[in-house]
Image 1 (tube, one colour):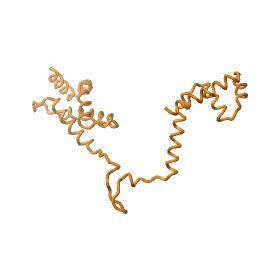
Image 2 (cartoon, rainbow, N blue to C red):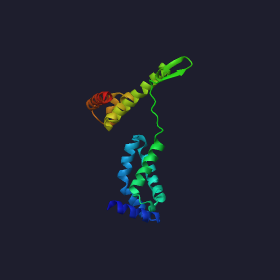
Image 3 (tube, helix red, strand yellow):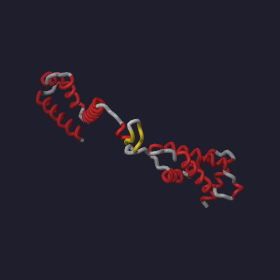
Image 4 (cartoon, helix red, strand yellow):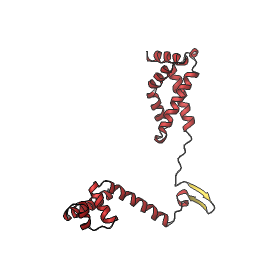
Length: 188
């Protein structure tokens, strides 16, 4: 029954019915997803592959020959299969341990990658700064305010207390709590 319904929708779509095309695409959604997973499961390209599948279904509707007595579902399955295999089979995974020839002889790709010590230091510094920033973002507004005043603006805790109209002890406790939270969040 489902096959007959789909074939009827295809006939309507061939006559120009946009709503029939939309229904066909909705009905073939599971086929699209399973085809993507079956033939090329590249998560990075999933949306592109899905959209290409929809285009292939629309092209299949136009090129489908009803006189051949082949169910549309079988026809579109083959069209999707060959499209995915042809279009997305070009991705090649390159190993860093692969041996290649260069001027100095044979070496692994990994050995040919060079990086100055300064570059490593910059990379580590950037990662540390990012981790610290993420830890800082988890602080409360008040903790951020006090950390900024004390560490960045070099304002004494007495002046911070006056500026925020809080007790000195509150400023000290908040600063210590903020430092503990920074350390905890930075390690995680």
